[in-house]
Amino acid sequence: MSQPYGLMPNLTGAYRTAEGHRPICPHSRVSRCPPNEYQCGGTELCIHMSKLCNGFPECTDGWDEGPHCREFATNCTLSGCQDNCSVTPSGAACYCRSGYEIGLDGMTCKDFDECSVYGTCSQSCTNTEGSYTCSCVEGYLPQPDNRSCKAKNVPVERNSVLLIANSQNIQATSLSGTTISLLSTTTKQTTAMDFLYAQEQVCWIHVGDSPASTHLKCAKIPNLKSFADERVINISLSLHREFYNTI
Image (cartoon, rainbow, N blue to C red):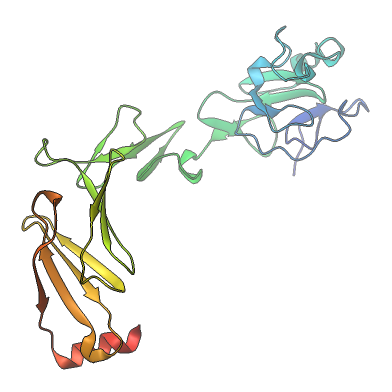
């Protein structure tokens, strides 16, 4: 890897001057900070590099405002940084404007792929030059934070509900956090479930102790109050055996 003139890489991924100075903090380690941020010595705290040596301590022990601020004060003039430069305990270090990160040469900036970071968007993420765009799949609406998505509520006056099936019952949980109990006396060993929204109907696989006692069942749950019209759906014998052999 090529190195910028007068700069040497340190353990935090920034660059220090080649004047023989060593990092003040002897327990420096590889930084896990986002681009353009610096890790306070001996901690997990990351601060933006623009806050280094700005006269206001950001690290809990004032690590960012140490004697290096005076010792390396003039080093940035020789750094050759494309965008910005900060004085760190290891010497001068280049950093970039938002949406960009330092390249392998330690001086020039390249686009940072925000979509490569898990959780940037709740659903779809499209990286753009210096930025990114979040979007939602069909049936969801983007939220004011421009990152998360919320399921469309149609009709709007009807609460959104999540159905959860387990080996004993089927429960409904409102997306607002309210739990609604929907117990069925005949629900046992539920291994699969589907919901027909327009018909307000839920179907599930009821697994018995033998192929003959394993059934596909459906029931209506009008207004999510209770199960009604529960019934067994007849399926072909070959399909019945195929399913039972796979569980």
